[in-house]
Image (cartoon, rainbow, N blue to C red):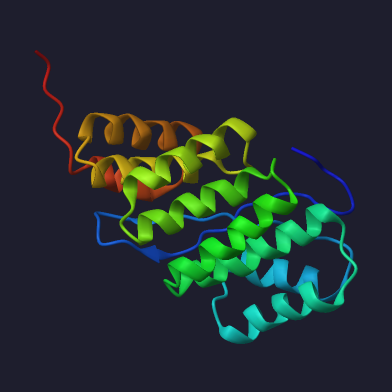
Length: 189
């Protein structure tokens, strides 16, 4: 991951109701340097979803001179807020824009995958989640958790089980994957 003044990546949970056993999780991008883009980043990382914070992100995109990484991160952060409000298509539009600007930003792919899960397009989500994991994200446990949800949506409980396990391995203190595994019964043949 790139670390520096203009784009330290970090994750924040985006609550997305998907109608499965759990909720997809998104990741925000930290933008440093002051101004509205940084305030947008802080709001996304703090779990905000209110429209006033989304407007702050939009203002930053319209008026601030941002590096490509911070501009892409601001699109991701605005998209994460849209995920929290279950606005799948408009969130996907923001993640698409982030990917156009910064194609190596793993969080954009993971979040686009989460939005696809929210829209019950499970097969579509897998390619994005896999790409996000390939590129690297600050909180890969969330990507594995999302991929587990997608596998469950595709009636592939074995793959879902292993991805929940991986999420626990990467983030042992995070309770959601462990809760999901309580629904599984493992039998040996």
